[in-house]
Image (tube, rainbow, N blue to C red; front, side):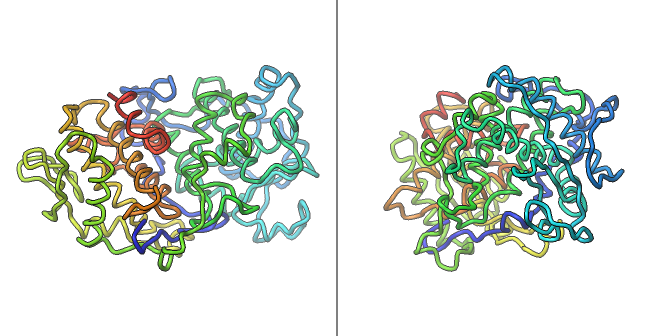
Length: 481
């Protein structure tokens, strides 16, 4: 973010970073108890149970070249059988034609396989899964990509990637019914495939799948984390021929499909993508395309930015103070806490810098904790506590069920305000992805009430932040009042 600072990329698309802290793997405490909690996910109850293959899932009757008995191949093949069932049911309903099964399926090991597929060596397709239209082929890297997805995020990440590739196969079959022509940009194709994946997961969440169960909390969190993983590198332009979208853009498309279904996805086109896409190159004033050290000078710019964004709210703005990140005798949500008694935001600079430093790229390649998410992740934590003061000042509750969603929505609204021309503190390429990464962390307070109670499901957290960014602060009160 910023005034003379910007966010460097964690990894390029093919590099496959990890975000183990937000993976949802293991599904959390009590996840196998079939619990539900307050709120909803696009009208579905918030559920908690172990997501993955059903115990009684049938054995898929598919011919897969070079398939193994590995756990990852079993999940991948079941995913293909499952998403094929989805499209067999949904394509006639929404598009008036039958779904034709994909003709070729292939599992490969890029470290040993030397053949060419779709005009390229499989050795060059490490950390990848793809659909090849000329061969009507879906293929995946079983050696490196799928094990990493399963280990760091859980089985739903594998299902996400294969569901996405089948989205491309569906585009090939629907052609003009999905708005696909030879001139359709890669970005539009990718957004639509993400959207189709969302429709498929909605079907699964409605218990229509023979193969999988997915909880709408931890299970969908695995999906959102994997979409973060396959985001474009920060600094890439949406006009680039290879652009796939930021994590912010890709989660938008997935959630659109989950909420409104495959027919809505077919309406994605260049015009509506251009109107909302956040992907852009670094500003010329971003020095080094990296993250700034978070010191009191940077916090001063943050204070000014927040005061300006919420200047018309009719509330006394809280003061950000370096007092350890907790409130004496009050809330303790370090590294940033809102203290109602003094109307201050107490911060711990060292803790914020731990969040805000640039990630370790080597660690990400090896599936380890990257160590940091970027400056905007830390600034968003502080902004969330600042908005607690604004909410309290206008008479809104800051410790009820809606407070967390209203908070993340207001953080999104502030981010949009700081993105306007002439702002002293400006968004940089990749900043919104940093916010999503932090938002999905188990201890993040971006979508939490004054006491740090977090909204349990990542779907609602991400959606509320996005709505604030795209629609402004008014929607935060209207939807999360």
